[in-house]
Image (cartoon, rainbow, N blue to C red; front, side):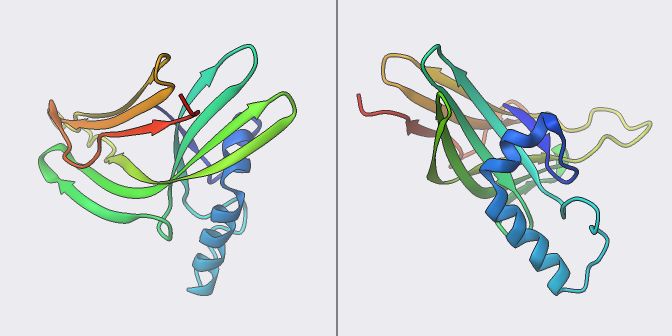
Length: 161
């Protein structure tokens, strides 16, 4: 999966910001309500993970949004400096100029701490997604230190078979 930082909107992140505009606005209001004014320019912290499927007729974006207000804690892997959260998932289907956005429930989001200068090893983790053309299903999951994270493997049917 690829990641987009939605804190500072840009042309490269516009598609993902559009998918999550309402949730980003809620997150921004929550920060302001607590008196946190650090994010007057741009958004409060928001990161997104996505998987895109392209075809001549339609494109599909599976997107997971990581914000303080939208996610819940699942587990911490201290040795890998990784945090796993349950965050909202949306599926956006683009057909020509029409866009349908579907609520996909919740999915696992992997946060890896930045490497510390001079430290050996560091975070070893990855989130992944694959598309099964026959079943029209996206499969997602997380691996940390070569182990699958329980509860993070999911299948999302994109279209009726």
